[in-house]
Length: 286
Image 1: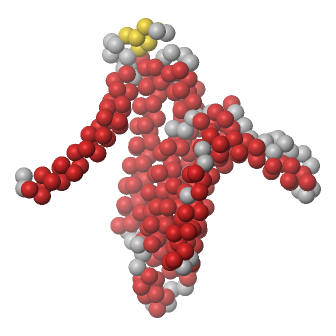
Image 2 (image 1 turned 30 degrees about the vertical axis):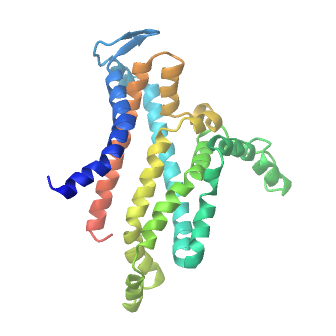
């Protein structure tokens, strides 16, 4: 091993150790825990597949996981679709000296507590909340809307707002890396604005779009605070069941098994997305 390689290992050793201790070790513990069993306070370390058999045979778990994926997919779609125009505007239509200000404004939601933002959405979407009161005040509706709180719709709205900056920033970075001369070349070759965007801008921005998709989708599947506060019975997700197994039912191995299944499902979906994107990019974005 040469001197440069040694210096590289020295530089990465601390963050690598940090990652192993705070990520790999807990994940390994959860995986091992999922093969144990527990009867209230008695933990049996005998290896068994009982938790996985129950997880795959119980319809409730399958429904919660399916609902989590649907909600996370809806949140990701809404967030990325709304984030792209914002990132595009900042990248292409804001003067370079003002882009920092715009990015600063985009990150302002991070200044407030996540819980506070959720409670504010409860105030906005509530039966007598700001939205219903305003719509009734202008005569747009006669009765308060009941489908925007304590259900999956409220979870999607709240999470889409919470994760919007996470989607805007990677898309903005990808758009900033696009060589503007390529767009000029496309125009010189006779492409209109729409086709230039479809055939040049969008394919080159796909790494940012994929990054935004993964950044939003993966943590959204595991969110349990938002569904608990604004989701109601029909908005609960798999993470809420995992929390219940760990903290209320004293069945940590079952909760660990559900966590492993959820993480595996998300990993497979992420790999499929990456493979599909790579294949699409190799095909020239067609």
